[in-house]
Amino acid sequence: GKGSVYANRVIGQIVNSRKADNNYALSEMKTGTTNGGETVSSSTASGVNGLDKTLADLENESTWTGLGFDDSNWDFDNKTPEGYPELKLKFN
Image 1 (cartoon, rainbow, N blue to C red):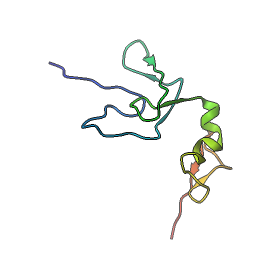
Image 2: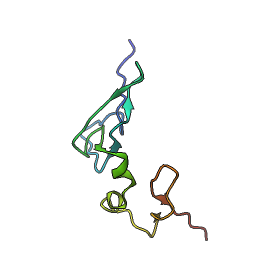
Image 3: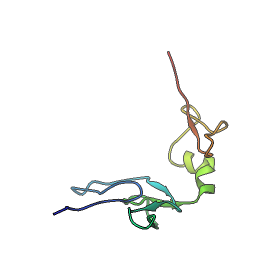
């Protein structure tokens, strides 16, 4: 047989009672492989589909700082073209 196929927004599957924390996902994100995918909704940040966040939420600095992102490693002023904080590269 084909076996099981997992297609979730953040994590394929959680095995052996592992825990997933602080998983956010774009609420409009589609998953699956048929008919252009399906929109999935989730109200928890600890599951395979991640907590629903709008594009406006993901562009808001407080969303990221609430997860522990800070300006020592992340650039909130010069965001990516998509509006997300950019990882600062450090060279020694």
